[in-house]
Length: 301
Ligand SMILES: [Zn+2]
Image (cartoon, rainbow, N blue to C red; front, side, top):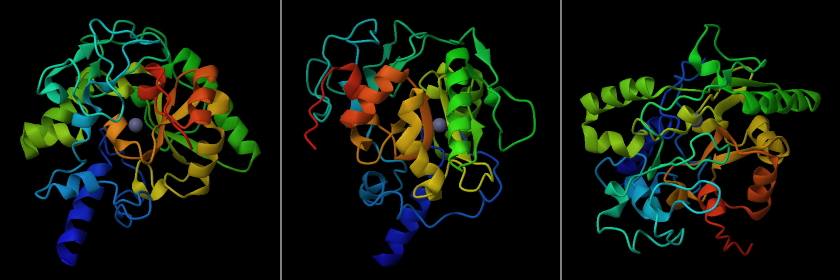
């Protein structure tokens, strides 16, 4: 039992790394797997995943999260009749196997508050036309699209990193913009390795990655340790981000305890730009972007 749990947790951990961010960064120290999920996510984070027994890494929170997405509010989609309750699994007016098939294309992919998740996808091959490289340190040296973000987000990220530096926290970029083609390459590799069904559970399907919006950046400490890994949770860098990201218009997009809403594991490193007003509201209310865009804020903490 114990051994099985550990094995499962370990597997979950490794897969977790590529969950929403979809790509395992080549970061120093990245190979040394951190202690499994344990710390970052009390519930063994992938509890959902391991719970289902046979490796369902990354869990399958997509279903409950399924058709809950926004649609109304700031990120309208083409056809979204039923913004279901965030915590109510896919019932509502959508089809029976809603979690998998009720995919909607977002109508305003350039909106800084756009909701992209397992339900809401970007238009095919969407690419923002204002990608720039923020002037911040990165944990890698090469030129790469991974350095890019949309202009407004890049400017905000520069301010965030400078503010952290003032507080004695050195941050660096790990992975920003990712084209649909790159995501497809990654995803196809996972499919080859594990089969499509499994791959869908731990990697964003092309068109569904937030990194394609140009509004997301994975962040680590400047030493690159724990980059996009569970062990980033609990670091002083992660704490600083949690405390201050909103001041600069960013949110921790996949918070702990909201896996069933976002469809993804807790990822303290994945910053998403939404603008200062939205970010502050989201942080103050302790909600997710899904909940925010639905204007449903049933949080009573
Ligand atoms: Zn990410």
